[in-house]
Length: 489
Ligand SMILES: [Zn+2]
Image (cartoon, rainbow, N blue to C red; front, side):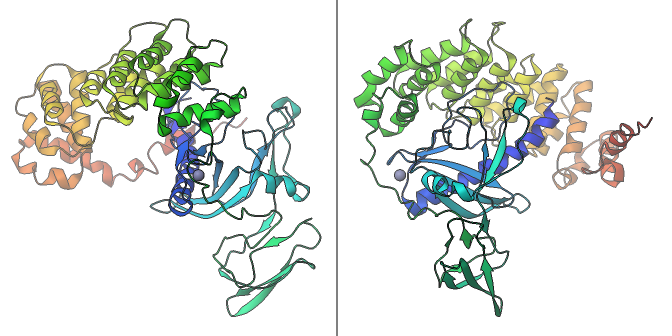
């Protein structure tokens, strides 16, 4: 996949990220839970080509009560899950226990900021109970694993109102609709009929009648309601993995020996062992070393390397940052470029930021590593970083100078760019002028008078782009794209 396809896919992933974040906020603020990501990267939209096959577990979990939550965000609110006839791939197989909760939300990506509304919480038990009323979507070919969607019907008026009366026996509900009322009936289509109670106000897009029972309470049962230390000893990996993951939030000290044992036992699944090291690593340098070895070891598979790098990125310690830097700058041919790029990414977007190390990586010969490092440089540059970038504009190295010019222009550090023109070698001067053309026009306008006539003229030419209707964001490249579609035989 090229990076343009990645952008489209990242946009699609963003919807799930916004939903998971809104669900997290609601569960923490309004229901007393303490939510962590059970599925790593459930709340990130970075696209990686190396796919890590993780355990089939829900996105989120509360470390106080141990309840698990699977969040789903769509442009239209629907109680819909992907389903399959393949063993272990049905809608209920994602590590959801009967009282775990599916959280559905409507995500509107067109508003700014993005808005998430109409949260609906349903236990797996309720969906099981209403299975007879659920509907299968189109089933794909058996060769594709018989994947399909399963939908639990509901009625969501597109207007706000209030429930007036509910006649459960005849399956009818009367609601206000503006100045009048509207009578809705599901007929006999739904085996069980649930509605909001009479007297309840509802918002536009909120379900009023539904074939399943909504969760009565999603309140946290509180600390101590989950015996996570016992779960660490379970023989079932679906039970043990969440406890291993939660340990770092609940205090590793009393269970350190158990975690070390899990990490060392070669009979365990690699993901469980890696996660045990990840929980130990913030307080145990040997586990940072173990994660580093997994990332760099000649025999590791690419998914193990990636997961080890992601784990190191979550640890706020100097040792972890050193380990990431070691991976990012590795010259070992067995370590793929993307693993190195992920390590660079972790140094800028992870728990421990290391801008000085990123500066070195922005000059890595690998385009993938250098661009990942440059993209996560902090928006506020330290004096040290800034001084180094200005040095790059004085030297005769066009690659470094380009990097410096881009990083400065992105931050609208226009005065620095203009001043650099005086000391820059000829080739670098042109790069600086190009960068000034990219910086915000307001920022540059004030400083134009300090420029020589030739630079002023060059910048004016670059600005002409905004007068060219075929170089606007929605038209740039459109003629080339259309010419590719003129094939007709
Ligand atoms: Zn809880």
